[in-house]
Length: 516
Image (cartoon, rainbow, N blue to C red):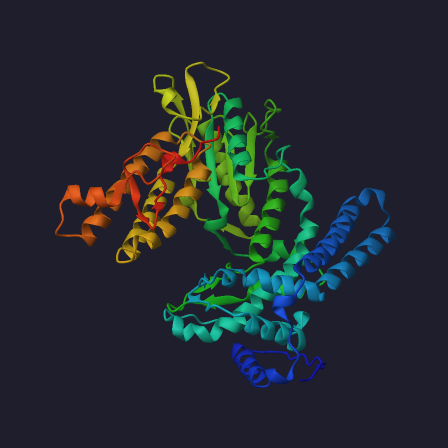
């Protein structure tokens, strides 16, 4: 076996050339020393990347404080920053970790669906050959992504598997070098004086903002799923100092073509969420200069051109604006669309909603709405925030109807898919759905929703038993599939079975502990 191999970088001009080179490489892979994937020390590899990313971050912070630096010092710091980014891009640890991140779904022995095709489960030997192929034949700076033609048949798209995996790995490599520069704004948000580490903090920030405005009108916009890039000029001006700026421009100009011959923006890559975040961070700065912004935990600031202040909350790609009056919300909506349009983004207007707090609005899977005290508050496990202006208004956050409908569809599809399988397989597939959903919504007013979902589960469970035993009556099906299978609860309507002295049962939504 050859212990060393000379690097022979190839400028691939099309997808067909990559496929041919990959096939030729597999024929002679026995003569090439590949990376031992199972013997890699991932702790050391991750530590190497973290150290370089930390140095990049500190150089970016130093460059951001340009007032204290002269022009010569700024150029010196900029050169050092670009040198560290190049070092991270050509680092072998970055290649290995990026490959692991892209192929992470394969470690769970499941198929990963991306765009219009499905990856096959990849073993460690194929991953090792892929890493060796990228290391010796693919040069990051010379990589040229090509437009891809997808069809509705996964078998015809299987030829695109290797080129797209390589493209996503290179995107992950570049992302690791670009991301630390734009993590400075993550510590403290520009428009709000608090940072949201998770969705719970963001929801609490929205609720707290609603309590500070007398008669709030809410604007919600999910930019991550409702945007279309119409111009890359503004984004180019934000990342023009990146050493591999040309490579990002190639990705931006690359589009994929569906079977209906419709050219669309390839937003399913690894690096595109980061590019969207860069655009939104710049959008916050422009929006703050146009509208007077208040922090959620403080009182209202000085009036702006609309006559009062606006609360601005952004978590990931979701934006919420809290205004005092309806006409002010309409003006802010148009201003939001205009500013995003000037930065190369176009929003789909039907997905930007304006609503009053009394009618409620959906945010991150929950419905936030103001209720009167005439409702039965004791039925809720989480009472939200009392309105500071009136004692007759109660602000509650409950699971939205859309999120409840989605979990019902997921559970029903699992029952349909495994209706002919053994009960143990069905329980194994449904229990994670119940636990994950109930753990997320257990912090909100979800007790009644959990009880309704438990009844919906019972209907599906009974139909499962009745279908498997069509000649049996209701009492027989109930006695066979329902009983005291959970010894920790005195509930005889638990769906499960016993085998060799062990009890197997399906969870219930109301069993999950709710944290206020």
